[in-house]
Structure formats: C-alpha cells, structure tokens
Length: 370
Image (cartoon, rainbow, N blue to C red; front, side):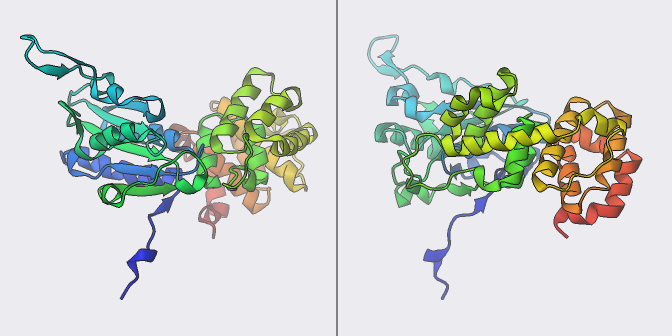
C-alpha cells in the first residue's frame, strides 16, 4: 500500500505556478465556470520569494488570455483587525437591528468585463482572530452579511512555520479545503522576470554568476538583512536613483542583502569596468570573445539591458545575434533567452530576424538543455 503520509504538496517556481493557475482560470472564464466551484489557492513560501509578484503576473496572464480587465485587491492581513474584514456595526434604519457596513475590500467591480483577484497575503502570520475571519472568506467567500462577487478569485499566501517567521500552523481540517502550492526559488524563473522588469544588469549579471546568492535558505540564521528576490529588487531600485554606483551606496545595499553578500556584489561589479563599450558590440566594432566566465556573464547582462532599451535598433540587434553565434554555446543560449524574455512582442519580432533564424538552426537545440 502506498504511504500517503510521505506525499508532499507540489513545489513550483513562480512562472510554473502562474502557468498552471492562469490555464485553469482562463479556461473557467471561457467555459463560464463559476470561480466558487474551484478551490481557493494557498501559496506557501519563504519571505521575499515573490508571492506578491506571482499574483500580479497571474493577473496579467488572465487579462491577456480573456480580454477582461483583471483587478487585484491586495490585503496584508498582518495589518488588519477583524473589524476591518467584517465591517463596522451600526443600527438599521428602524433602530431595531444591528447591520454591518461593507468593508472596502468587498467593493469590487462585479461587471462581466472584469475578473477580480482577492489576495490575502501573510495569512499565516495574522492574529488568530483575523485568521478566522480571513479563512471564512477563503473557504466560503463570505463573512458575516457580506459575500464576494461571482467574478472574484481568492488566493491566500503565507510563510511556512519552518521559515522562522511569524507563522501559525494551519489546522488540518482547514488545510484539506484548500489547494496548496509551495513556491521555490528558481533562478531561471527569476531571470525571466528580472529581464522583463528592468532589474539592474549588474544584479542580473552577478546572480547569473552566483545563483546561490538569489535567496538565503538558512532559516536558523538571525541575520536581519539577507538576500531574497524582494531584497534584490530593492537594491535595483536604489541603484537606479543613485547613479548606478554600488560602492557609493554600499551601506544601503548591505542593509538590504547583508554585509557579506553586499561585499561580494560590489567586488564583482568591478568586472563591468573590464567590459568594452557596449554600443560597440551593436555596431560591429567589438568582435573579441572574452575568456573569463565572470566577464561573459557581465557582458550578456549588459547586452540584454541595451536591447531592452533599444528594441528598434534593428541593425544593432542583428549584429548582436551574429556576435552571439560566436559565444560559447551556454552563454549564447542565456543571451538569446534573455532577449526572448524582454516581452512577448519583442519575442515575436525576433522570429522575423534572419540572424535569429540562423541562430535557432545552429543552437536552438540547447534552449531545452539538450
């Protein structure tokens, strides 16, 4: 007999989760299947792993796949009281009954042209009185006198008890009424997101070189600052407003990802000073192929950033793909994957470029790791 006790919940990357959930919800919209007939989703994962970004990406996929506007109502339950969810009691018109004013989170567009997502974040860390109210919404789509509209999807998220965060263990009877997914840190998934969301090329290059620095998995650590996808996004935003000089804002970077990681990142960023003028790659003036691994990672990160900002430079992109043909196969594949991750329109445009077609014929087999 199979030991069901050893079967765990699925562990998926952010983009695999978006792919799985968007497929179900888009199919539900097309087939006119009510959302209330589908189980509510519970996302588990380490702090900063990207659960909020996942929900926003899911909304974009649903909107693109259905043509309906998808609106996310983000509720951070750690900041809520039970009354924030149920509403404020007041007297009825004839002063004989108590009625509850509808909370703002229930004020959703109920029209057929809209899909709503109610995202109940930090549900496992909220006070238990708030959890009780939130679980009623998650399971029954109601609380007190108020109910969610039929066009609303409910997704909850929280940290695992093992993450050493504030988290309460979910009762088994409650857990059995939810669909659980654990979100894992996956570099390839993060990279596709980072390229399309203009994360600093220095960060993209560094983490391409040091995948292990994307997320600190040591739940026993007492460090207040540690690397996560969320904290690297914070560093990227700091670089954008500070002149892109990591050494000038080292204390702030250290405050986001920790001193040791910040030191390695700032040291690695000096590699960028050894790069050619990146425009020369796109004009054909630079033809050398670096031999150092760290320089190659920095180079392809800089090339990706250039293309993201110059998507109309047809000749330059053509020359850069010709240059990519001469790179080591694994770096060539990373570069073209980055190009394809910029956005769907640019990916379709790439398919029309003769040098990209030739690249696919020559190295396309490596795209799936073959």
